[in-house]
Length: 44
Image 1 (cartoon, rainbow, N blue to C red):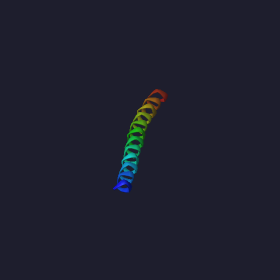
Image 2 (cartoon, rainbow, N blue to C red):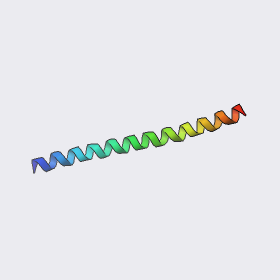
Image 3 (cartoon, rainbow, N blue to C red):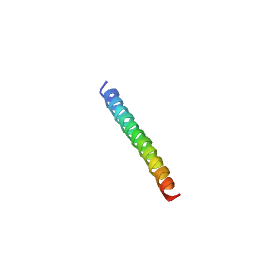
Image 4 (cartoon, rainbow, N blue to C red):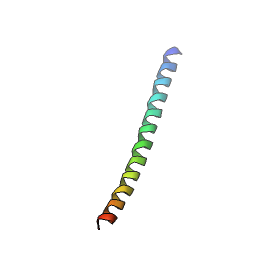
């Protein structure tokens, strides 16, 4: 049971980390896209 709890905790931490990275990159690329579009509009 102890090993199972350890594995479950490790898996949960991995899941949270993956979710955090996914959200961060998703918002980062959306923001980057907006900045890029605004920059292109200003440049032209």
